[in-house]
Image (tube, helix red, strand yellow):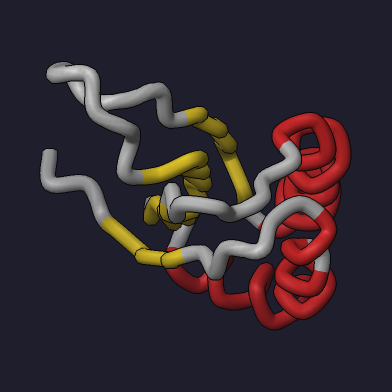
Length: 103
């Protein structure tokens, strides 16, 4: 199992359409990648820090795949379509990181 983390930095003056992201983009991710090994998708909206400062990230997507191979195949098959949808909801360039659980 691997977890792909997609982080959208909270940059001053940036645009992020949360309605589009949840209604269209997250649905596209699930539709394309669930048949290819996406087992869970969680989408988190940054609210702030414990001391009241702005959140470092506007949105964090946590995408769990059955294996690293499944993630690679999903990105190869549909990554271009999914990544080309990003300008429809934000002008921020996401940071993507692939992780494995330590437990």
